[in-house]
Image (cartoon, rainbow over the protein chains, first blue to last red):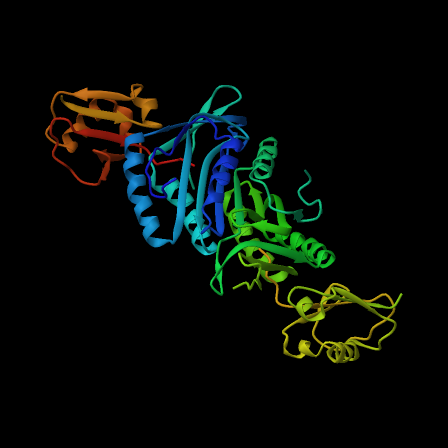
Length: 147
Length: 147
Length: 77
Length: 77
């Protein structure tokens, strides 16, 4: 439960709703927390070339992600008065409707948790070497592009 | 599951982490969702006049809250491209470490869910006739003030 | 049916009761004067008035069945 | 131990393999030229280079044990 402990952000397959509940529950012992901010990315049923997306397959340069996250984590704890910050990103196949990203920040007062959560979502999308491949109904695939 | 259905935002006592998981899980069927933003208010162990807060007791002008929320909800669905928005606020006693507020917004693209969630938290604190009374270890109490 | 008066939050520290009824009252200014007589400590209290769940900022006529609420600053969340 | 080259995302559509080794290579410019000879379609591909998990924007000398990665724009989240 140490707030700055570094462990892999990667989760094999979709992130279960139950894990989110368990993580929230764990924080009830931290009585200096007043606010939690959570962002969840869910795989959306887009259409690519007329075919429906059924899943995204995620791959990553894991070693580089871990090294970058260690630096980013330090920066966030310097910038924001956070009690804790937990980040989980799926690897492998995540079907439409399932959760692929879980960002969870906590603080005494709401602005720190909210602002850190928002900035972290942007940082993950821009800075981390992770790639999503959208798999369609006809087995065709399209590499995802972030905006 | 209709996104604009109006029902009471009030929840008797603390909001269980399990309810949050169940609510997230329900949204996996909505395949046009790409992003969820969640804010949780947790009762913090402040000190008041040298006494530790052990709980907050919430009361509300329930009829007025429901009427205001119906208007606010319409405004939010006009302003943001939301798939759904769910708000739960505790009534009665919520102990330190327990959840008293749960704001949950969903959208196709992340900005709508995130911005709506942030604005809703501020709106709830400013606009809704709800009052919190902080109960301290020695049974003394202090009416909570929002900043 | 009269006029119902509701008290919320720290206002109830003064009124003790959370609700009372008036047989009749011409307007909200008159009602406030009567309440101040009954609960003098309200004079030092910051509160808003709501008439039938709408915050009001000026004197409003009252009719049978109206609900007036005395609400201190909100502190939800 | 040589130099390890890693391919990610849409770059692997061109290279098919996700990893290969070079016995020796003077610098990243030289390595890129060799890779372009082996995989000509890389010429039309947008990608960044990372040397030992750090994005690089200019030519860098290579030594035994170095890891070079070819990474197309990120699309996590």
